[in-house]
Length: 221
Image (cartoon, rainbow, N blue to C red; front, side, top):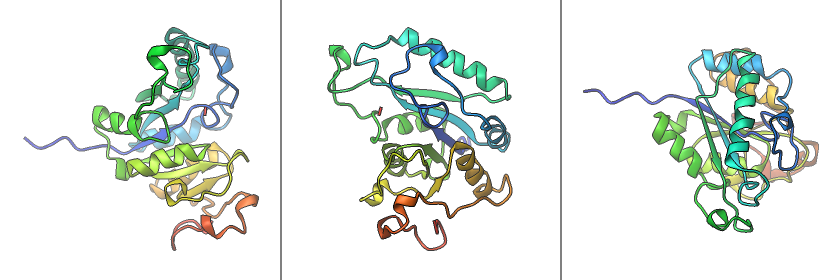
């Protein structure tokens, strides 16, 4: 019997990438989806890429909300995405933090970004090809997790990140916002028109440490 062909995926951070960033959201109304990302997400999904959310949720370890609360938030997010005919093929979250107040969750783990545990689990459960997949996130911990898993990475620039000092934290591309990041993925996958691949945060402009390989980027929570 032939082995199952593994799919491409776009892994997506939640806070700051899919939804507006705010500190420890705990209610469904706290998750406000970014405008103008529904259509590019749908293009990627219709083009054969699976959409998987990967999110650190240390608020669980800190006792700020429960897993039931998180489920309600993610149901609301799914409903909002459905308005654009977009669905998430998987949702993975890390509930741990060593400084937590819930003893069972106040532990070191392999799933909290920048570790790649959630991506590796998703790849195994959803039959994903990590080397043909992408990670889109707004912090360098997202980039590092994606790079460690073997994905191509796009950093959404919220103006919070310093130039990376390590190759593991260096994104393949940087985007002005999430919609731009998704256009980059679509362009590189042959699913959309050419996108601006040369964007870099102004603070990085003179930093040789973020120069991308030739032919690529001339460019917790």
